[in-house]
Image (cartoon, rainbow, N blue to C red; front, side, top):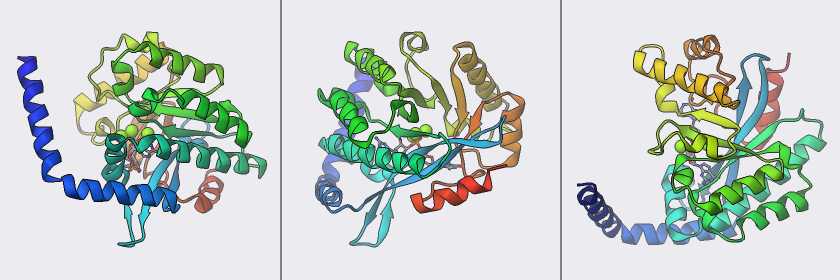
Length: 280
Ligand code: C2E
Ligand code: MG
Ligand code: MG
Ligand code: MG
């Protein structure tokens, strides 16, 4: 039966792909040009530590400013495309280099020791040179690994491949932190949590959304917070938009929050202002 379902979803996928082939192809071409022409940007969204009331880090979020249309293309539109076309390796490298350079610059400019997180796609783990690329970028930019965090999804851990274990262990040796993004939305069993070196669980925003009026989401969120703490991991809630949500999470002893209530993702030159707002 499972096979039947897989077959169906495969067909569905093919149909979707075919009907969109032309636009996808031209979009992929445009994306490659965007990478070459520096039309990609990074926005930064702060992470707020509830206990200290201070910013403890930020997430780097990729943006594409399409000059043809003068519009900002959201990552949901082009990351999947980059993943399908293989362009994600080069884009991922661009992101990491850009972020590490920015972070080094900020630290030298007197910023407190914040940690910046970068999202990784599963495909990047299939690239044999990935670890070397990360090591080289840290060396070239002079950023110490302890200021860097990689956000991976359960999709990566699901395969439970030896290479993923090895890659993550190497990152740990470099001092880099590992977090699981969109936690709770994947299909994997929980057993991987003790098999992989995980530092942070990020509770998916779909649970946080209506946390204050959906008892199921409230219990799931509480359970994830306890799970994280029992595993000696940090836990952060994504998509926090209201004060009520923040209070709920504080009461449940969630470590940190990220979301519009604190700040939306902002361009780098606006980040100093965000930091200043939260300095006591
Ligand atoms: P994500 O890593 O789960 O990032 C969180 C998303 O939630 C971001 O969307 C962020 O702008 C949005 N968000 C933050 N606070 C709130 C809130 O309070 N309410 C709501 N409704 N949304 C909020 P964004 O920037 O559009 O990114 C979407 C996804 O694209 C990311 O999800 C991530 O999976 C992917 N992505 C972004 N940058 C990169 C990148 O450099 N590399 C890779 N591989 N993926 C990336
Ligand atoms: Mg993320
Ligand atoms: Mg997320
Ligand atoms: Mg996501």
